[in-house]
Image (cartoon, rainbow, N blue to C red):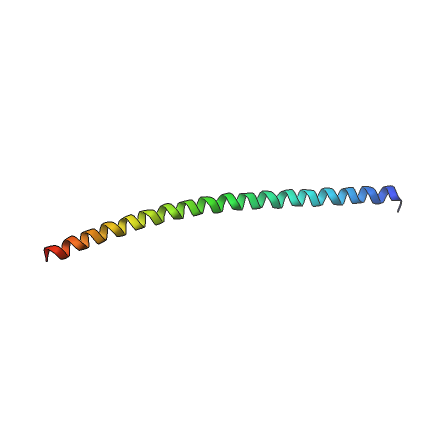
Length: 67
């Protein structure tokens, strides 16, 4: 194998590695976006639940006062 063939193979390997790296980076970015969206939705749901708990506590307190 000549030096020129080795250089070509090295360039081919480099291109494959770059393609894989780009794909992995894109997958990580997609996962990050998905995770951020899920976290936001969970925080919104948590706020709703906390609000509902507060309302139920108020109702419970009013019921206790009546009895």
